[in-house]
Image (cartoon, rainbow, N blue to C red; front, side, top):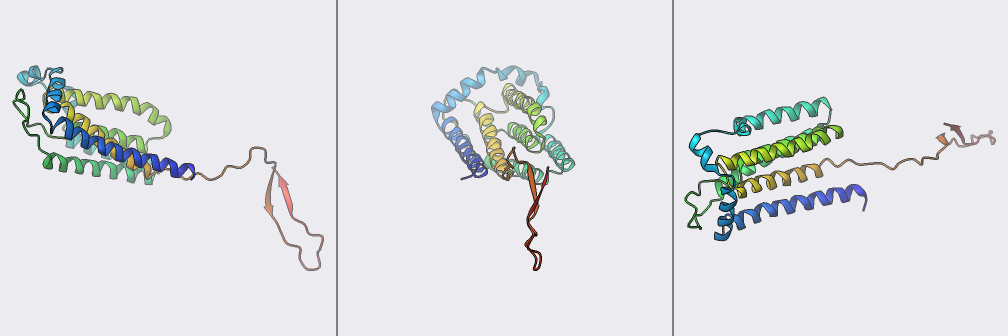
Length: 233
């Protein structure tokens, strides 16, 4: 089994595990009483009551999720086309469209029952659309950026995802479980998309090669002295 196959395999395994993590997060933190109570305690550490009362919206949430999605999609396409990374661009666009669509389906299909007495509102949807869009936008950019750009964008992207997640908690729009679910879902899409763009690497020439064989002609009739030849580098 060559390195390319192994690289694709572990990315596919990671995608499956992240999908499982999304489901486990929902089942444990949303569908059980103890999970809802733990989720509520984690939410209360961010004190969403102040921002709810004041009506203030943190800076990372001032741009609506659909607008952020559109801007990120345009940026990904432009960068990918400029770099002529067509396959990576297609994978990044597919990642964003598929994850965004699947997240919306989950928000409609999955409910949040009121299982804990101390929780008065269960209107928060799973997963968080804001966190999903932020995370998948960062992951899509990582697919089309050059290697140097990825080293710069990765830490900035992580900081942005955290800022968006914390902001949704402080305004009470979502719970920690919603943010985790959104991140896991986007990460699963990234793992799957990255498996589609693993490059095929050919064998390398020996470093100590001193000649390049240009041709190996066969002796012609009447010319028995013609021999293969090589040209020094």
